Length: 310
Image (cartoon, rainbow, N blue to C red; front, side, top):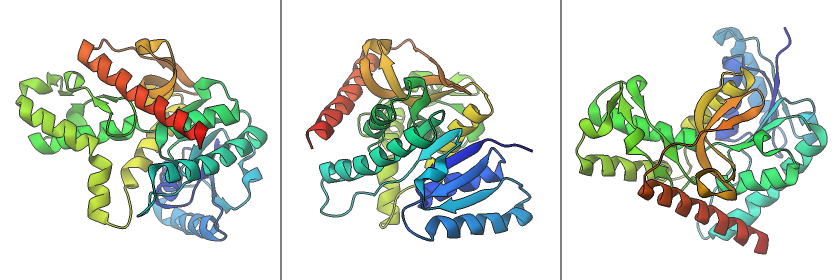
């Protein structure tokens, strides 16, 4: 059986979990890449040895050589560093830009037909950088953030109401950070609007918890950040692309006039299929919602300008 090939850059917690879930779902064969010698090889071997127990036949290998991305149908970029004590946001921005830029160059050279899903933070700007450095058409470079932020919003709604997460639908737009835009008007529980189930103050509390979702986990872990949910979000996008599911998912994409925004990357609902971003969905937003989305996009634009000056 011939399977698609996925290259996952970064064998840390997020990247290794992405690789694990892709092979367990038999979405593709995986090559796990990292600059640390032995790390991707060891994790790949461990996952290969789990296959007889879990019952999957997808193959996984580890590599330190970027040319091994060759032939990949999909590339997931998780490589980068987390912000450390004493490190400024610009330090993080500059370091991860070097990492993502180098990966994008390798993908352009060795996997020119791949679709790229970016996970590295600061997400929106790293997606923009990957687009610029690969030179790929915008429909083939997309960032993972909205699926994660929406999953957190859905999880918190389910916790608050004591219902199954399967019955909760929601949508979060904008940049991946404090300026993200959860849309309670588009949140439902089995079709029932959230506003009919919770008072405004509780809805606002859930919105704030969603915006703080990553920081809440960092505060609890103390020495790390979230990786299970980010990996699941990236794999949901990968599955929609590899299987041509054409799911409507919020993702970071290049906007060219939609929502009154142009030449900027921001999170909006899109249709993901085997060509990447098949369509950008324009929701009907209130004046306040549109203003919040445009403000979030301006934050992304400002960070991008700051990166160019570093």
